[in-house]
Image 1 (cartoon, rainbow, N blue to C red):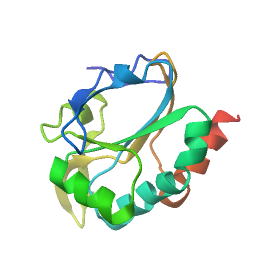
Image 2: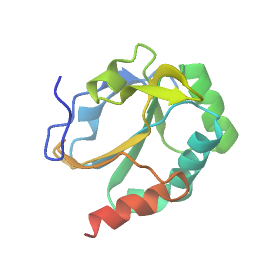
Image 3: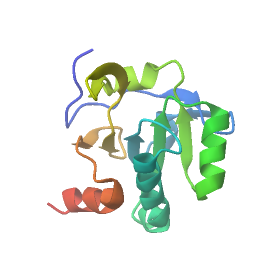
Image 4: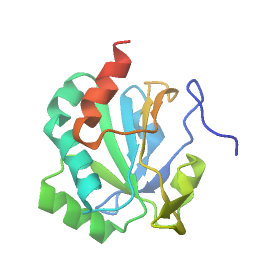
Length: 154
């Protein structure tokens, strides 16, 4: 699959959320979606980013956005993460790594000289018709919501 670009149709997502409920990206037709990919539940950077979206969730809803987080963690892991940090939005399960591959965020990483595959922290802003408006590859965990708002006002 070719790399996704601004203006591309967002690949359909069909998966389960933290409660085992079926979720499809097309369910959100007519709403703008913040689809954010993060490496792992309950790690420092991922927690900071999730809490930033949590703290701004009501204003994002008022602005017509829905927030969806995606990682390769299990339903149970997502449930614990949501409960611990009172996250009000869905976390999508991608244990088979289909979504991270479809969105091109499953990449080779390098930490302390050790190479491994993992999720690149990336945010996609998708419009009401499923078209990618923005792709943020250098996510500012503490200011993730403001980073999106800044792009939308340019």
